[in-house]
Amino acid sequence: MSVNIPTYILASGMIAGGMNWKQALFTVFLGNVPGADPHAAERPCGAQYGIPVPRFLRAHPSAS
Image (cartoon, one colour):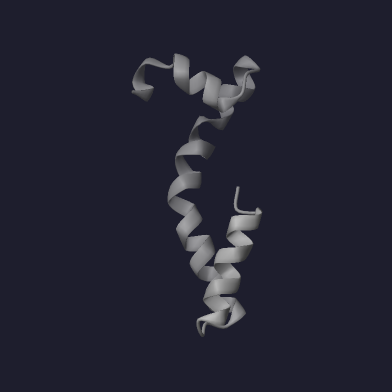
């Protein structure tokens, strides 16, 4: 999820702002963890039913 152009721009902005590459990488990683955990928790359900996770979440009653 974090390998995309906006993430590269964010990290390069952090480096231009004075961070070294390790600090920028850690900060991007730390920022992506909260969003990745719920998505990873629903992944087995999508694999079980053979549908993408967003479609599963729309039909799932507790997703609201």
